[in-house]
Image (cartoon, rainbow, N blue to C red; front, side, top):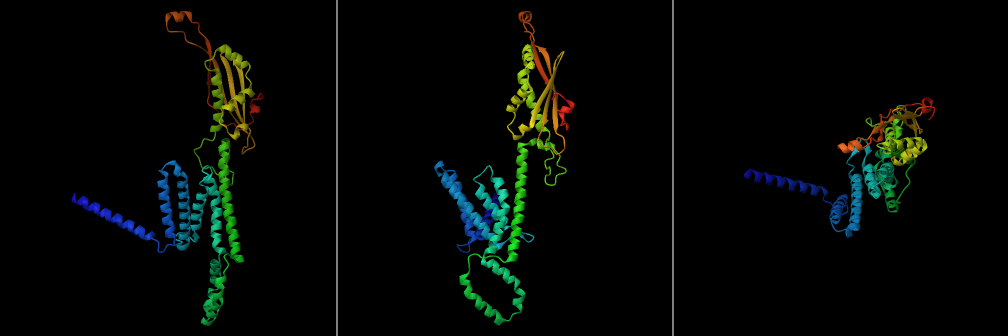
Length: 379
């Protein structure tokens, strides 16, 4: 027990020391500092959490306090990065990216359905503007001029430096709030903005491709091997699943109309079966996607001694990577069966076997890249 007590005391001392060191690290040296903003953001998040567990009347207070928490955290992070600039990737400063990500996430969090899209597309553009802001301030422009004249200033004597400083002192009080960067700086900023706009366009193009594939999943059947801008990443995806689902919808519709129905009724129904009506009924049961209009549903049947031979076709008439379109085929058989008689002797003698229809279908074929009319002229 004594060892356990000593261990607990050591652990508490270690924990208190860590808390004190963390507090000393974030202790503001003066009220107007980035540490103050970070502490205000933590306090705001804590108060927003408290307001969340209170009654619904405090909903507005919760969102308001949470918004101030984000504002304080963004301002504190920006101030900290500008003052200390702790992280770099080579010579690239990452503080504009961190700040712009927080800013875009805060602005577009009110649009949950498009938050990821809007944040990702606007992130590079906002980063470029944040990088360019310091160059429109007089202090940054003076730094650039000072760096260019360092070699000349080293050669100047003390008297010339004193005269120069004396001439520049009265101008400090009349500094403009914003200044136009010099031509070389403007050229760098334009290149920076255009490169970030290009990156934003590529990100938006990626989202556009994903939206197309959601509404037109049959495009995955095409080959992207010759594309310079699109690469297939999901190698485990089922490219032909959409066409098989279309045929499965046709089979389900036919099964609901045929299975276990009286044979005489099925013969009458088959005589009036129309391909256009079948396509209309099946598409009403399919998931609502924009690509549905590119699928043509056809069928062909022939009567046999044992029933009917029925071929179902799903023909894709949308965009393809090659010259020919493709189609999928599924073969079905409608056969005649009989309802079993009753189990008792009386039911067995009185009941007459009633012919019914049974539907059985094969698996859907793989996409066949050819014109279906070449193999089946009646389509």
